[in-house]
Amino acid sequence: MTPLISINRNIILASASPRRKELLARMGLSFIVSPSGAEDSTKELSALPVSDQVCFTAEKKAEDAASRFPSESLVIGADTIVVLDNKVLGKPRNRVEAISMLNSLQGRWHRVLTGVALLDPERGWRDISYASTLVEMMELSMSQIEKYADSGEYMDKAGGYGIQGLAAAFIPRLEGCYFNVVGLPVHLLYKMLLKYKAFADSLHTGY
Image 1 (cartoon, helix red, strand yellow):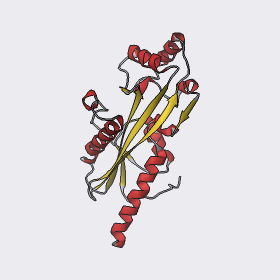
Image 2: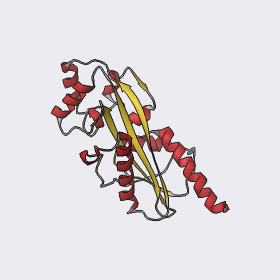
Image 3: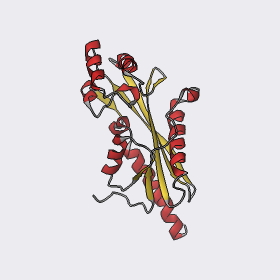
């Protein structure tokens, strides 16, 4: 596949998420997967606005991976959270937590944010941004919620559901970027890569 943009750098994805790997591959980019050891957004960040939380965590994930690829590399870090009534819903630790999260989300709108960090440590490039999407979830009975939880799809997913999987049936509409809800806002990342390419090209032309 011919990429829409050519980056003369080793692209490093600081995530083990299969959704993010798939979306980055769809952009036609070749990349190395180097999962970050940095944690997802935690309660220690709860005093910050949610947009700052995802940007901070995405940056930390990118920095962790960048420490292993200090030269000729462009590192992508990302962090996704679900927000309901200004409360962050992270990844459920078990089936009980997943059921509780889904019960709180059903019949309501919530917000999904993904922070994206783009780092080139050798060139001193650092760009951090985020995308936000409003998502409506239909009213669900406890039986429907439990049946979904039985599928195990909630595991490793913020808010306890995967919009790209079985839970797609629960989402009548959304406002914003669909891929942001999956875990990587493709359009935002593309704009960030364009900005980086313009910067990199300017180094060679002397402007």
